[in-house]
Length: 117
Image 1 (tube, rainbow, N blue to C red):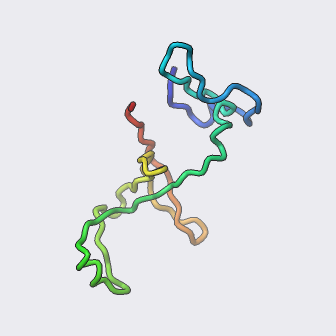
Image 2 (tube, rainbow, N blue to C red):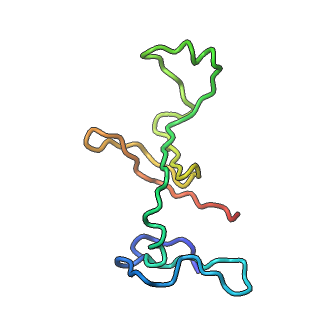
Image 3 (spheres, rainbow, N blue to C red):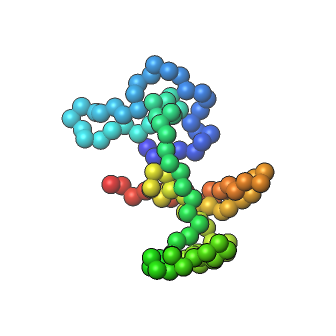
């Protein structure tokens, strides 16, 4: 079974009162993979922390203390390079910065496949 689902493969609105997402097979240590939106209903309202990291740098506390308003901190990324998108501190995608109605946003350009744990 393909574990990568496209959004349009997930189907219509979920139906309640179906089997839970994590069903343990008897005698097996593995859980079933959700295959439809109704399988995911149990997790829809769980809050997650989403972070977009433009870049990083390392500096000493003495350097940090010397920073004033208008100071420039050089990051480890180049202009136009993809930024990292994290969900609950796990890298899940890369993307590009966009402007939407005077606010910054992110266009996801690459989904990062996690390696089995």
